[in-house]
Structure formats: C-alpha cells, structure tokens
Length: 412
Image (tube, rainbow, N blue to C red; front, top):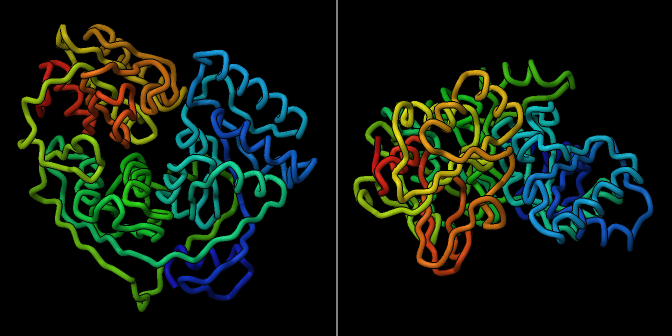
C-alpha cells in the first residue's frame, strides 16, 4: 500500500484497503471556519445534540474576520455560541490567522492522522504526512455528530520532483508548473504523493505550499513523507505521539510523473484557470492594478521575507495597490520584530490583520471591473477576487513584490 492507503486502513480498522473500496473511517481531527461553521451547525442540530468529541474539533475565524458585514457578524455569533454550548475549547476567534496555518502552529497536525476540514485547502496538512481533505458542511455535520465518515479509497499518482531551484524560483513555481502539466482535472479524486530530491530538501513552508494546491489538480489529497525539517517543526509544536507511514517500494501507482526543475523559471497562472500556466518570460509586461501577498498558500514568514528583500528601499508603483497579509499572528509578530513590516509600510504597502483577506473576494482588497490583480494565493477563477470582469494572475511572493514596484508583471 501507499501512505494514504495505510492511513485510511488504520482509520477504518482494516489490515489493508484498495482503490475503489468504500470504507467508514474514524476521524482524528475535524475543522471548520467562520464561513462553514454555521451551515455545519444547522445540519448538525437536525441529527444530534452533542458533538462526538469536543477535543477533536477545531474552529478558526479567518475568512471574513473581523466581520465585514452584518451577515459575517451573525455567522460568527452563531459559531461562538455553539462552541460554548458544546464545550469546544479549540476555537480561535481573536485574529490568530488562517486555519491551515493555525492548526500546524498550535500542534494539531501530526503524521499518520486522518484530518477533515470544511474547506477545500485542508489538503495542506499532507505536508506533514497526514491524510487530510476537504468536505462540505453536510458531511462535516455528520462528522461532528459521529466522529466518522465514509471514503472511497482513491487511486494514487506519484509525482517525483528532482533538481535545484534557481534564485527567485520557489515551491509555488513547482506546484504551478505541475498543475499546468497535469491539468485542473488531471488528478480528480486521486491521491497525489510527492517525492524526489526537491521535495526531500524542501522546508516546511514550501511543502505546505505544494500540498495546499493539490486540490487545484482535482486531487482528493496530496501527501509526502515527513522529512527532517518537518520532524524538527513537529518536535517544537506537539507532544502527541504519531506514526510515520511510507509507501511500500512495490506499490503500483495509477500514474507517475517526473519533473526536472533545474532550469525552471518562475511560473505564472493566467486568467481564468489555475492550469493556464506560463513561464514568467511569456507574460512580463502585463499591466496590474493590485498585488496581494498572503493566503494559506503563500502568507508564511518565508514569503514575507522574499517580498521584503525585493521591496527594501523601494516604493510601490503609484498606480498599484499592494495588500500584504501574514497567514498567522505568530508570523505577523515575527515579521514585526524583524523589521519586515516596517519595510512594507515604508514601501507604501497596506499590511492587514492575519486572515484570508481578498483571496476569496470577500474582504480587504476586492477588485473592480476591468482591474487586474497579481496574487500569491491559490485560485484565479473568473470573479474569484471580485468583479467577474476582473482578472487574477498567480505568482510567487518575490515576483509579486517586484511587479508591485513596476506596475506590471516583472521578475526580480
């Protein structure tokens, strides 16, 4: 079996599972946020009175936080009351940051665990060797009630990545390149297992970025065996015991892809599809109105450092609005203490509180008709960040920062 099958077999109480098999699995951790908690709660109340285990539920306010309208405020009020009623202590509603950053930081994520979240980018935790996937509010309500859910065991894809990344080429470029080659539906309901020397040498931040965007290929989950960097991170964050799984050497994958990233340049996902990926050199000179650096994909400290290195001593273009949002309060505090936030402010950047911000087109940076945004986030669907007649390009943080200076897409 592969890593994913071994985790699902353990959770289902079976010695082995195989692709296509329907299983019922016990959940190790369930997560909802301010946007998905209320519909989860509404359905939950139709089927149960008490959650299965309040210690295994985590709620994070991040999508529209602080509340940007009356509807958001009411959603958050409903969620706070529910957490209090059910004895859910793991609720983060004081600006701690984006759910997919907060959960690892607070020690909730460990290798070998089965984690579900009412958010599509829950697949981020595959960076730590966990099986993690997103689901809708109705399914999550049943998880809240029973601590179980069903899965069809996915087929598996092996993605081997080798080579050394050039200057200003990042893990974001690796995953964009892969999505461009495999396609937005090329891994639908498959488990994508990442391996190779590039992945082995990648830090925690980069591995989270790669796993985060697995869903943009349609994958059920993305996963990788924990490396030394991950184990050091976990040592500082969690005291829970865990088991590390790895794929058997004779496992047969449904598909295998090999990528050599030695000569790769920064990649840009062009409107309106994440798999519409082109090398930076093909889109340089494209006019932009706004730059957003942040999100659960690229709002980590390493991303802020890359942007600060480019923006230091510079000013953003007079025609460009620049919004930078750290992924968590911990990252924000570190950036403050190390002078990175001052660098941003001096460059003319708007730095906002940790959260999802304009990524979903709901808060702190919505774009208007005809406007073009360059973002470090994960999606560029039509209307994703605002008006349906706007356009969104995706890049790494260094490219986004340099483009902000010049008013057009341009590499450092």
